[in-house]
Image 1 (tube, each protein chain N blue to C red):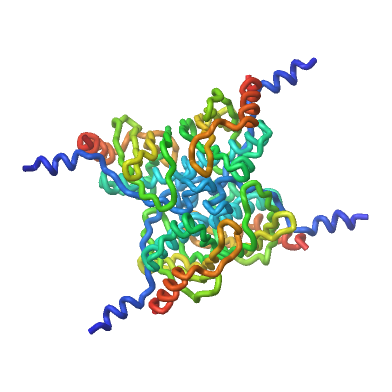
Image 2: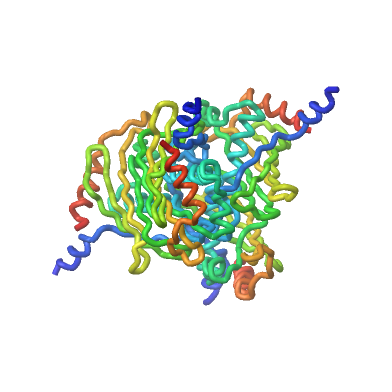
Amino acid sequence: MTAAPAAAARRPWSTTITIRFSHCDPAGIVYFASHFDILNSVMEDWFAEALGIDYHHVVGARRVGLGYAHAACDFAAPARMGDRLVYSVTVERVGTKSIPVRIGATKDATEILTASLVIVTTDLDSGAAVPIPGDIRTAVTAYLERQG
Amino acid sequence: MTAAPAAAARRPWSTTITIRFSHCDPAGIVYFASHFDILNSVMEDWFAEALGIDYHHVVGARRVGLGYAHAACDFAAPARMGDRLVYSVTVERVGTKSIPVRIGATKDATEILTASLVIVTTDLDSGAAVPIPGDIRTAVTAYLERQG
Amino acid sequence: MTAAPAAAARRPWSTTITIRFSHCDPAGIVYFASHFDILNSVMEDWFAEALGIDYHHVVGARRVGLGYAHAACDFAAPARMGDRLVYSVTVERVGTKSIPVRIGATKDATEILTASLVIVTTDLDSGAAVPIPGDIRTAVTAYLERQG
Amino acid sequence: MTAAPAAAARRPWSTTITIRFSHCDPAGIVYFASHFDILNSVMEDWFAEALGIDYHHVVGARRVGLGYAHAACDFAAPARMGDRLVYSVTVERVGTKSIPVRIGATKDATEILTASLVIVTTDLDSGAAVPIPGDIRTAVTAYLERQG
């Protein structure tokens, strides 16, 4: 009886973002740097909605950086303004000071891009990498188990 | 007598870019998507200065896209506004419809980032990949042989 | 009995936007150019939601530009990441080839900014200003009468 | 005999910026928010070259904000990638806590835009406006007298 909800819960979190005029370049498609910028928005919303943690509070008040040591993207098909892309987030593992994630974006049945980001938690005052704060570790670990 | 110039000519092309206020984020360092945006500026100047080809004319008048099928960056150290980064470009090979390049950026003796971009030449009207235009192929091939 | 709905309908359209990490600068507040970028998003959503016209279709398929002849903003108070700003749009008048609008943004009871944009409809192929297309004129005129 | 240099010195400072691919939108022209972003680069270089003051050091180490209370731009003609725009800066007056400036940009003989920015000096920790620091006041006042 609980099978359906459990199965539903085991899908990775996803969100839909509409491509804006300002994301696009003279070729009429999303500029590659804008794709990376959008990925950061996806991360912010993933923190809030999937982890239950306020990204802006972490970076702002707590002064814990959530920047990247690595960012990569394979662009499979162009996206244009007005397109509604569905982004889904998968955690690869939970490191000591880093969290590698994969993000896929699709438009209808078409793959648009696959990205790999390695989040590194840092002390924003010193700039040094720091162990992932406990609440973030707990939430990401739970997500990792839940994502299926 | 011509040894020194020849040796000099065998270094990859490089350019210096000053980090702007607008490149930086609330952490006070260059936002990762801005790093990718800067890399596109490096590509534009590399076309003009190292290949002798007008990037904007290629994309604008000739309608040949120079977008990326892949973009990746490893961030080794943060960069801050006012930093002057030296970017150097190495061609990995010349494909049929793609040109994979590597870009390294340093600040003084410090490595800031290493990036990998795969340029794909496209027909901007159809969006389809097209063989690298002859003048670009010739110039990139010459650069590849010259870069040492 | 219909007074309340009528009164409600006579308020200008408004939308809420969350300030992103990437909107903010090393001062920790929204970068002024990002404020203008956000205003374009507000315009896109205003077209879709208040006018019932697909902004991206106008600019994309119909090749009618919706750029600005004038853009101005008074910044009353800073906005920070995580802030939820409410933007409301008022049409000043409907010109022959231009639509001047005013946009106010508030955070709770605090005024953040007041902006003035003059949209000019253009032929994207020639770049010349063109009369406002009929469907846009009709929708903006109706909005102007409705906005109170 | 010194008339020519004196006359030369009485022209406002100007700088040339090349429009990038990334500045442009699907209409193929500079996106209005990118125009404002470029204006900030002009301000950074004006500080360094015309005032002899390191903008990044003021905002970074000294924690004095150089944001805007007002920003406005009239767009006279579109600019496209590859265009080389000449920006010239005129100080309107030196206030207590603010510096209103005007910036004009031309391409060859064509006016592209005229902008008005009101710089406000702030304490980046409190966010409050502060009197213009002495060195900046001295340099801007000297520029005002010199600009002709």
